[in-house]
Image (cartoon, rainbow, N blue to C red; front, top):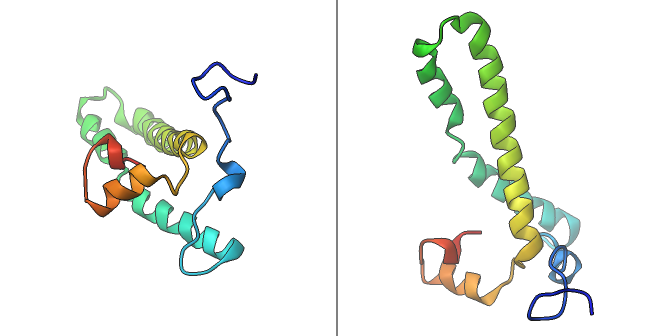
Length: 116
C-alpha cells in the first residue's frame, strides 16, 4: 500500500506522465506543450499587481532611496515564487484534463471549481 488517502495511493506527480504535465495548444508534441505553457504564463503575468503596492508604501518609508530598491526586488521574487510554486502544486495534484474543471470552464463557473 502506497498512501493513506481513500484511493490507497500517494499524492504528488501522479499526473506528470499521464495525461502529462502540460496540455498542448495549436500543435502536437513539445512545441504544443511549450505553447500551452507560454499562454498560461502570459495570462498569469497580468495578475501580478505587487510592485505598485510597494510604490504606494514609498511615502511611508523613512529612507526611501535605500529601502525601496530592496523592497521592489523582494516583491518581484516573492510573487514569482508564489505563482510558480502554486502552479506547480496545482499541476501536481490536478490533471489538466479533469472533467470537473473542464465542465466549470465550459459553464463559465467562478470560484475554486474553475481555479486552475
